Length: 246
Picture 1 (spheres, rainbow, N blue to C red):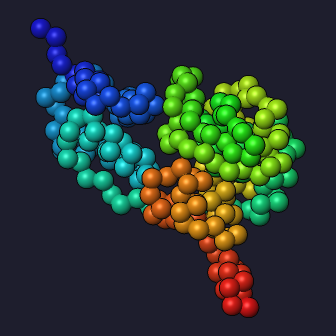
Picture 2 (picture 1 turned 90 degrees about the vertical axis):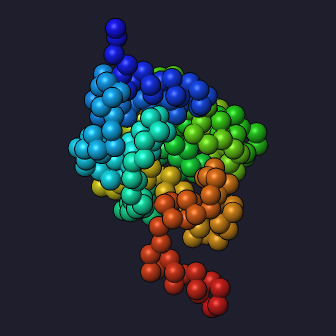
């Protein structure tokens, strides 16, 4: 008689929930990362899973794994309150110039000026005028899937014109590593998520309302947009006060 494994139960539960293919991929990757696929389901106690989670040093990653396990297995694992990551964001012109001179220009610009995530940047999104409809992404295994969150994004007209004539041709990993090299060469932080953060921060610093920011980032919650994606400095606050009150 074959043993029912954690992977067996997880796959069945996900099939019953009819979740998106991208979610299935990321959730099952949790089992691979924690080496849980072949573990008998009888061992999947809260204590056992908690101990496995503690082997993950990064709190954000650990929380993502905990959420995945709760969804797949129905176990009540504690998820710590997420903390926004703080990036060292260079001025927009500095980032623009660094990316513009690289072969990853349009990939980086799609993150910086349209807020695309890595998987979304390596797939051609539909665009009409200066409105981009983001609805697809490439998963790490090369599978085309629906985007993590879909919706229209208004982009600069100059970028829209260039994007309409461009077609992505490289993989997620190639773009990720390429942008990292761009950042190292320019001695600034250039990663997909840092560029998306810069996109959000620039919008807010130029007077974007919370609701417009949420729509541009394609979030379900304004709180997510403001808490995790916007970085402000004392200089930013002073600029806004002067703009408002002189």
